[in-house]
Length: 414
Image (cartoon, rainbow, N blue to C red):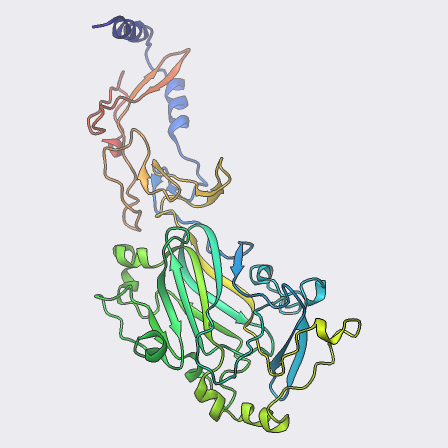
């Protein structure tokens, strides 16, 4: 035994000699130290229970990148098709009232003061089926458990025919399909229309034609919103707590939306609105009355019939992922959002037991069992000193708990 261990053992015995009997006041102090706050949602009468952060729009205020922005480099003309007429305007990032930045998608959504993002005008023929690949990439900053992804289109804007939604669980390094929308699912995405989801393929992205639910001859025009529900049609959704597969399916750090096609060829050829607009204006849109008079004609790109992808809101409903072990997420010392972990758990998502609490394997909290991480301790109390000792060997499995003067071990920690 070297000098270090000799001194450590000597100090330990000196401390044991100083221990006195527990008094009633000592026990009160001890209990107050261990008792959880009565307002902590993760505990019920000092018993651990499942808890979750509030449901939020995880996209609000988050950074978003767009591969195409109207008027970013120079003024550009665009046209929308309204219910009875088309309206044209121009975009110019240098003029505040004519900007259409991607940040408009995650700001406060006010129906009385709509802000929009617009892509650059699509110059090709409406019936062209070549994919556009206009992309919006949203970073949530942390893992969330997603309930829905919602896209709201600008007033009078055309609802795109083909859209792909992807998710990432590793901060944008890799992407997996989440949902597809198209009038030609198999041709564009290689998937059948409304593929049947079973327990064997619950992590498969479906493809649906969102126009089929729209009545009348306004298909493709002014359909204000689409919303993808992550658990809709998934057989294990009713038993979500027991389905690691679905828990993984709803988890995301980033969401990406790719616009592949603005108009369906079928819609273009058969929709009365397009026919009437083409006949009325001989295949061209009216010249915008908004075009700036102070600029020369050559300074603005004028494209008769140029339409854009246009959104006013990009929302992602969900909860900060904490595996049932935290009721809120907070900013950590590094400035990143992290779970305020309870139940003796640790990590950004409370995905592991904290140090000295390895006597029970980590588990996600459920309604029936909070799966609190367990540890065993040595408790000492003297009139002048309160100390909490934890002794664990390197294998993190073997530990001791000493109780003195009738102070019994808490059965939940054994």
